[in-house]
Amino acid sequence: MDKENNKLKICIVTAILPPAYGGAEVAAFKYAQRLYDDNESEIIVIGWDRTGAYKKSTLNYNFVYSVNFRENPKDAKGVLIYFQQMYHMWNCFRVLIAPMWKLRKKYDFVHNFNSGFAFNRVSIFIAKILGKKVITETSLIGDDDPLSLGRFPDWKDYFKPKYIRYLFYKMADRYVSKSEVMTEIFEKSEINPDKVAQIPYSVDINKFKPADPLYKKELRRKLNLWEDGLIILFVGGINVRKGVHLLLEAFLKVEKEFPDLKLLIVGPTYKYDQKYINELKNKIIESDNEDKVLLTEKNVDNVEEYMQSSDIFVLPSKQEGFPISIIEAMSCGLTVIGSDIPEIAKAQIENNIDGYVFKTGDSEKLAETIRQIRNDADVIPRIGYNARKKAVNNWSTEIVDNEYKNLYRSI
Image 1 (cartoon, rainbow, N blue to C red):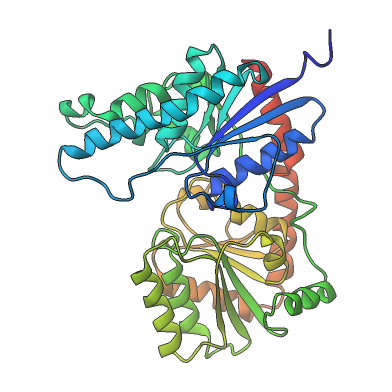
Image 2 (image 1 turned 90 degrees about the vertical axis):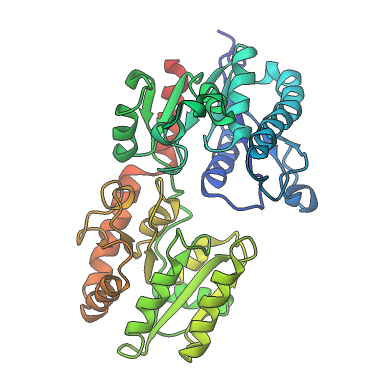
């Protein structure tokens, strides 16, 4: 057989292009880059440059085809919102149909890493028209899982744009669950279980790896961080869902007991509720901790360096899918603390073995966990070792990419 014709030809559709932020979309783009370097695959990415950031940046990937259209920044009121949603779907169709048709010979599979955006679900409809196979993923429980997407409590809901988007979703050939927690949700839905594959997000274990003490100090100097003490790290969007306020409250409860503790919050603030951001900043100022708490307030493209500079990683979210930041931190050998939502406590962390979980929404419980770690000198190396081992054995890019290839070939 002609080796060229035997290649896996993939089209990833994404509603967010770099350098804009979005966990599932970041995972999609990293995967696309790996496929580009893979001799057994061909890849194109059709992406919505919704903020214009990709066009304005210095990024220039020859496998990326960007599209754009104006997005209404405010939701309409009352019944007008449904006309607005229909118009949005039409715009998605209008900008997607041309590149998906023009490039149709370059791909056999359309792969969505996020099922929440109308942009992604419209691409499923177009792909089926073009006779392509479609894989679509759940990225956030309570948002784009099949039970959330297919919930229509009132008969009038069946006449709304949401129902049309759900019909598009059901056209996919395969659905990817990121963990057993998501798989259980699929089993309760009307999606055929035979169409569901459980494949987690991946982590580059060679990039996200533990740093020795000397390199850690070098990184701290490079990043203008504190050279001494233990750094507690958060990476992600600075918003209520991620629970950043809980982390700050917990830190303020323990910082006087342990003067060597520092708090590093890495992530953008510009795209989130400014009232929430200002409340965080005011708490830092009022507690006289400006020298112990640092917010980067921007996206960073060197997350691994911030992780390798730190000692403890905390993700106090109240809602997740399969948070990539946790498996990246575990791969770096950090002592990871996560809220006890099933997406973390059941799918990623085994409490007191390779990390810790605390009661969701309870800053006092989080503070107690930090105290426990700080008071036991053996915890950080023991938990970090187990965390790294788990990441290597379960979530390396090599393992996950092979699972994707098996999925494509099974369709």
